[in-house]
Image 1: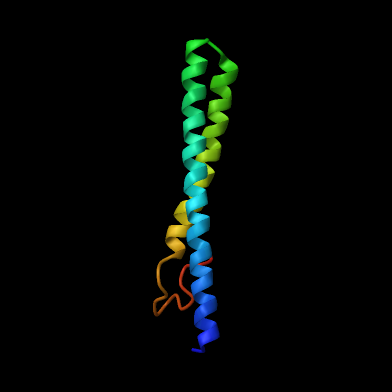
Image 2 (image 1 turned 90 degrees about the horizontal axis):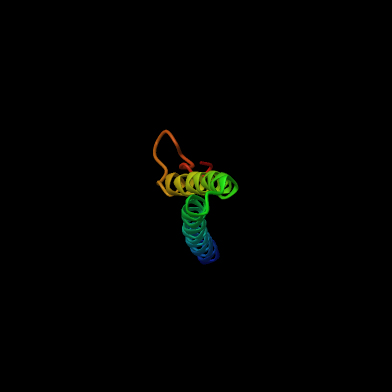
Length: 88
């Protein structure tokens, strides 16, 4: 492989790590707000806050699916999956 190709591959790997860190941060922030909404909704007896916490759960679930997909995509190529699982 050429040096330019190796450099480009390294840049892509760094970009994936940054994206993964941002997704993890997004998940943590969303989980914290979801918990705050659940606790607040129970304390003030607000079905609206509890309902929004359920909505936040769907966001957490989708971010979790994205993280699982990124983890699967990190697996190396093998003989029957020559391009690896990047498209996951």
